[in-house]
Image (cartoon, rainbow, N blue to C red; front, side, top):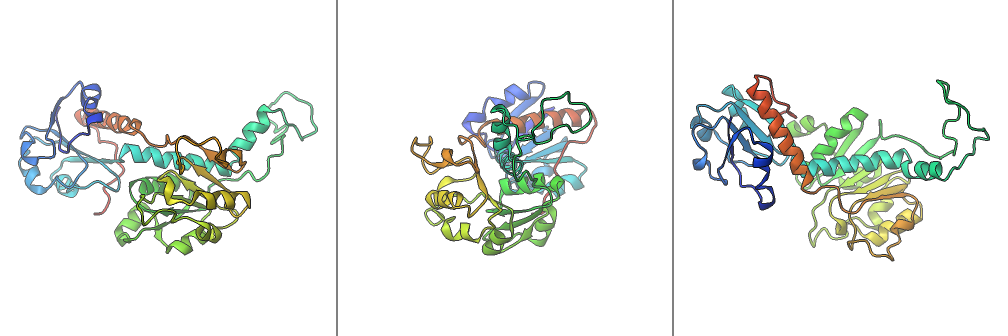
Length: 329
């Protein structure tokens, strides 16, 4: 197919079209709609540049792929109305951040690390000798790990609702979670319905959530915006999750809340100083899951290009593309 990328590719992504779309003829418009060839059959975009005027110049257009579940733009409805196949796929880096956050939710609530440690240390509080495991539950939870729970049917609070937050809200759907969000500019009713979220003021979100995930961008104004007051509003049974920007959190206040049982635990991918200094007390705590700032990364773009390639093949074969639906503007 004749494929054109409407928006400029970052330098680190320049080699990906040749790697993933070798069976297609690829052009780069570098953010200039006038540079999109009229013979284009598939248009890849993640901005507001796609409009009716551009669509009218492309008589051979068969497919539009938008990268961006929340942050993307373009008039996909106009393309759809013209009979052009359309698909939305998340901005890959931030979809991986959302998946990482979900991993923290599951790991913390399921007590993954205590269970792993107890298993490899050979702790057995069941009083039973090892026996062949047939279909009967012979010795369930033999280390007697306390508090093994699940995110299912719980409340997730998302602070800073953008691409990562929207992806996380979608990932939470199969768990039947209620999803609250706080954002300085509230979403439209149509957006709230599409993403399956309910607006809450920050204090209400903190007090009503079993998991609080922050994706707040770092600015001087937002520095240490999660501190002792905010942790004090959370349930003692709640978990704090930061896969966004470290210094939006008062790390000392978080450590104090974790040590004192003010909150149940935390999943952290980012830290006030990185790499993590040897004297940071977080690794000594038993109610945390820590990762070395690897929630996102360029690998997410590989996910996006895999989906672009697969959708191009599907459209070329006369099948509908895989899509997350067209979000309201």
